[in-house]
Length: 68
Image 1 (tube, one colour):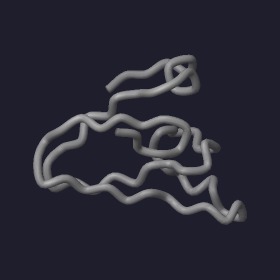
Image 2 (cartoon, helix red, strand yellow):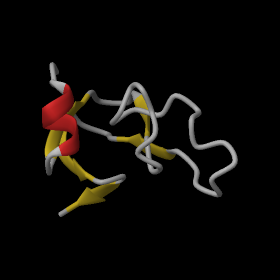
Image 3 (cartoon, helix red, strand yellow):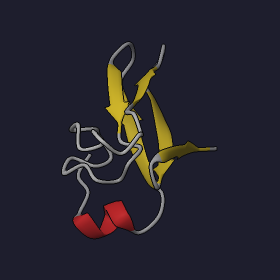
């Protein structure tokens, strides 16, 4: 997955999730690795969003949350 800075902050993004791999998604939107957590949420009261899937799939992520 390759995203530009503009892609990350302008709307929804598709994230390819690999089977049985745990990802930690950013909920604070401060991560330098957004949409993945880098610990920048410390002190904000927010936490990373752990996500594991039993199958390869694509999830939709927008503004620090998964969307349907």
